[in-house]
Length: 115
Length: 115
Image 1 (cartoon, each protein chain N blue to C red):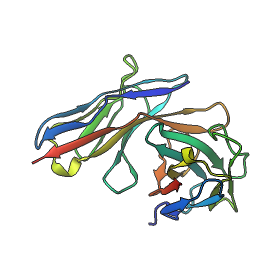
Image 2 (image 1 turned 90 degrees about the vertical axis):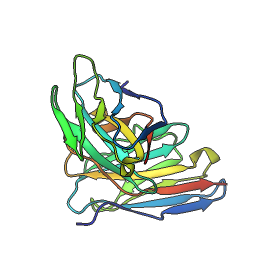
Image 3 (image 1 turned 180 degrees about the horizontal axis):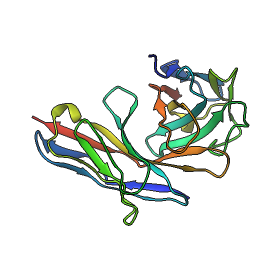
């Protein structure tokens, strides 16, 4: 079945540091790829997405490029802020074969940014 | 506009009791999903509804779990004879359509604790 593997956390960075959170996937079909973010005490929010190979999703200074050849969708940000402290989830959306598209999530990476 | 809402936000119950969790999707969204977020298992797909089509129940962990969606809008997830391993945050999401590229928007979740 489909699966998503993302780097284990927690990750602690100083403000203005460069961030990379690695994400790789396996899928039977041609999935869409997503990064969701969960801020403390809040629900899951879509951060960015890419729906086909070589697409780059971007939002709030975060970027990720859909790499089909390496089955990866790594999240990057050039200069993190304290307000970026959250849990980040990589996910893919693929046909289940039972009548729907479902999201398959990685286990999440907790990011803490210190001033 | 209003996002996905869920109620209650927290539910504490005793082992063996039944519980009902409610989800109000974004108005006009035809697709509705339930997921479960637990420490041990991460985020797991449970069930999917699309319009009047038969739901995709492939993610339900046991026959104690059921869900319905009335009038193509509000959905209720029911867990019968709750067990301690059912303790988790139950998330509802909706999307405008059922295409693989459609974004799922999540509610704040219901935290279920089974004593």
